[in-house]
Image (cartoon, rainbow, N blue to C red; front, side):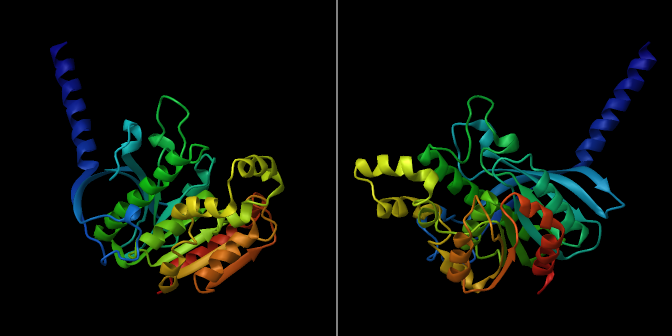
Length: 324
């Protein structure tokens, strides 16, 4: 009996040791690239240090990639403990670096499958993909209450977007510090909601030299104020003295058009749907014009049927991020 207990203890100790060996920890110093004069105060980060940890999750030898889980504290502390830790999945090519690395952001209400597919595809093509959970998403969703990033609670929505942008600035510093990553080839992309946050983040973080916007754009109020579905709410809003100009000023802090000038020096690719019923095509055109009329690809699809073009769309995405 004693011998069995001893063997069991040795086995458990061995397993614990193996798990610890897979866990990496460290500290990174965030250093702004410039004086941040082109960054609104709400999105600035001063020089500081933060801790991080990463553990190996799985290896896919046939695909030539491995997936690791990354965690670090958010620079913003909310009243929800779960939301105060940033979680990410790092899809790394099984080859010698340095290689490009790209932050991948999710859609509004998906099961995160799309972002994982994109991150894996990037890694299979020699580009590391860092799928980062936005505020209140995935493991960051509070156990109590229906708390979401996007909601009618505008105060929480604006603060959640701010928190996510600052989280992603830390994620950029993490990518920059990785020895296998080419720090001159950092990028960010997102789909639908994620594309708006990606564009906003790229405007605030100059280390992100490349941006891909999938089914997104800019100019929220101009795009939706006259929408037929908004008529009932618009009429009520205007009865109490509301105006379109007041709304534009209110939403300016999260609208990618506000600081789009910052993207003219980056490499921007926009993939839009001609028949998009969720994100009006004019929003993609707005951002395209505001960022210097770089590259825009139009899909003959709607917001949801655009998934039929995923394969060809990802081909353009890979080409965008791998070119120097």
